[in-house]
Image (cartoon, rainbow, N blue to C red; front, side, top):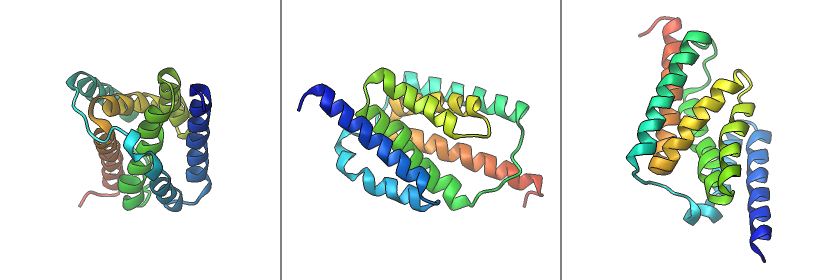
Length: 169
């Protein structure tokens, strides 16, 4: 099997994993991702340390958060904590960062990781794409652990702010 066939097979596998995640109700779709990633576990960068991309990720995340807070504001919806802070970040970072960068060629991995991630966040695709760049930089600088932690922090922060809309405890 040639390089082009391997790339096409990997891209098809990633598209299928994404389709399954989106088709199944939450959290089943996320659990399906955890099972589907097993054959690819050796290709994933689980942890790394590159200060440049990590610093850029934190700066871009902060800018995205401030723009989001100023233009969109605090969300009124409060999804279940376990789904928003645990399952979604862990599964989405596997699909949009770990598998994308492991299975797709570099330009396509960035497009998938940023543009597709943004488009699938229907509330505000442009802001989601900006967060996607920050999460991609976090993955490139710190691996899956870093991007998942930043994603979980973001979701926890927004959930906390949404809770405070109804009176902080």
